[in-house]
Image (cartoon, rainbow, N blue to C red; front, side, top):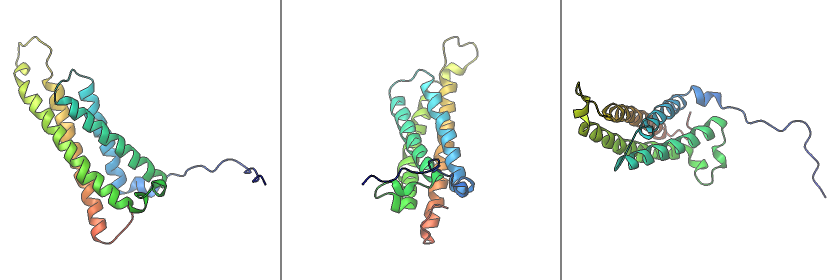
Length: 167
């Protein structure tokens, strides 16, 4: 037989408001904002060489963070095969093993590039200067790496206290 058609409007996904107010939810919002500031700053200016890796790393981590944030906000992490049952550990590894490492590398790259362009910050220099953009990106990257470190330590502290949930 044919199953009966559902009655009424389709069920809506509800926001997990407790997550949004939790330390991890607030840190994720900061990571998304500062991460976007990093990669938009790099992408909006001329970049070459190792800055390609910095941009790739920042966008990769930003997209993964967006996925973690969205699934956590909707309370739908159980839909992710294998990782959903280990959501706290997934967040912990994402933050400490992946995001901090990639953002530290990206920040180092942009800081090095800013140092190499510091000469163009002198008064009277008339050519296009990327020093400000590279320095801004490295500051955003450093702040973002710290936010990932804090969220990773938050997840680690929950894990060490035998708590299995992210809130």
